[in-house]
Length: 101
Ligand SMILES: [Zn+2]
View 1 (spheres, protein in one colour):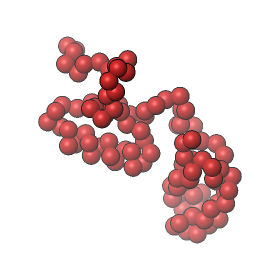
View 2 (cartoon, protein in one colour):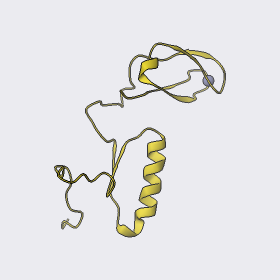
View 3 (tube, protein in one colour):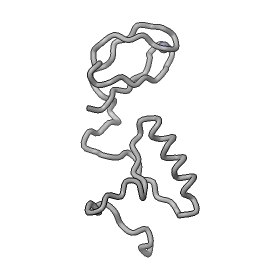
View 4 (cartoon, protein in one colour):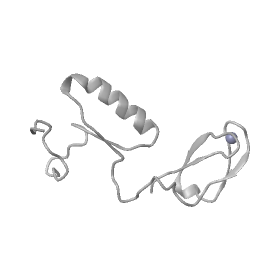
């Protein structure tokens, strides 16, 4: 199950709580306020979608693309990035980047 991301209403600190912790009480690590973990996911989370961001890049930009991917994923934004997420035999959503525009 995906984790639950929510914000402290007091100080705005973002927190990630395991889905199993929905409805439980936690203390904000920044301001110490007692909070109830929400049961629902934020509206931006579409459960059917496997990735939030598709990263495409030229070979020379790979270090930049990798850094962007790591930054996004540290914020719980799932990225699709080649070659990591290219699964052999599952090419349905993959089109060659060399295709003429
Ligand atoms: Zn707080």
